[in-house]
Amino acid sequence: MTALTGESPVVLPLRRWRDPAAWRTTVDVVAILLAAALPWSTSLVSILGVVLLITMLPHLDLKAFLRMLRRPISIAPIALFALALLGTLWSDAAWGARLYAVGPAAKLLVLPPLFYHFERSQRGVWVFVAFLGSCVLMVVASTAVAFDPALALKPNADHGIFVKNYIDQSQEFSLCAVALAYPMARFAGERRWPLALLMLVLMLAFLANMVFVVTSRTALVTIPIMLAVFGLIHLKWRANLLILLVALALGATAWTVSPQLRQKVATFTDQYQAYKEDRAVTSIGERLEFWRKSLHFLAEAPLIGHGTGATRHLFELAASGRSDLSSGQVVGNPHNQTLYVAVQWGALGIIILYAMWLSHLLLFRGDGLVPWIGLLVVVQNIFTSLFNSHIFDFHEGWMYVMGVGVAGGMVLKARLQGASFPESTAS
Image (tube, rainbow, N blue to C red; front, side, top):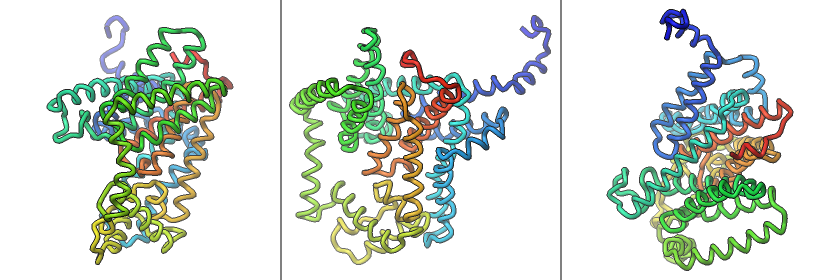
């Protein structure tokens, strides 16, 4: 091949090394692989995240990147990481605990590079296709494990869990199921029935797995909210009314035929009653205790909190001398994103967190598949963070970073070109 082109084996690699297009393609491939790996592996995602940043360096336009850093969508996540780093200075926790608590915020630093790269890339949609395809494979694996638990890679895994856990899996499936509503509606409106039917089948596959195999309480709460957001933004009131009636009918049917769904919903009241009446240790009871204590910790240091990594030590002090099990639990995470931030960094942290969410919500104004995906990722993260700290959890945090970063860059590119996303993007 080199003989035909007249280039030596040394010249061609050097030319590739200096070619910005080759490096952009490399970054695209790494991002696609990261999205595909996200439902399956944490270690591979960590490795690919580092590789992603390294491969961006050779073709980085420093001036353009610095302009990106000055945007509110970039300032807020950087500020949240900087606050986590500075918070180590006034924390009473051991230095090992302080530095360990900085780590979960570090992934937010990947957002500005993703905005920068996918403002220039042509392959952002393939990142979402890779994630969707990987989740479809996970549906197959989860269903297989439900019939034969011996197929699970994870020892002593929950029912229907091939790898990871039911919370992560439910986050993936609920995001994909609701995201598919947009292309399905567009294809149906264009009378492209085969594609609309394909979107419907995939959506039902995700929902069926959650109804009959395994789901989380958080997903049960957030899916109706995400569907309501879709209806209010993209559909007329008659279509919303029809969807509501269909959803009620499907919900009643699922409730009738799915013991798994009834059991999961029943845990809301059963666990709450066990906690209130018997002070039993239940998942809901623990959360209520975590939230009550966290509000007390916030009142003690309302402005800048107790510092990075201080949460576990505060719970240890609060648990000392308590005889009932529900009040004696010690955690480093109160299972609420606002309280997770508030205990460590006070009102200042809350302001920065909410500013980040707001700036990212405003980024995805407008119609089109890509703005819809970005908006949905942010909305899901906000509402699931009522019951978890998903920005700083590994799996859900990377879902947020990749979803917002890739979609955000694509939206910025469309606005720079003075164009909107064509409906054919859904293809």
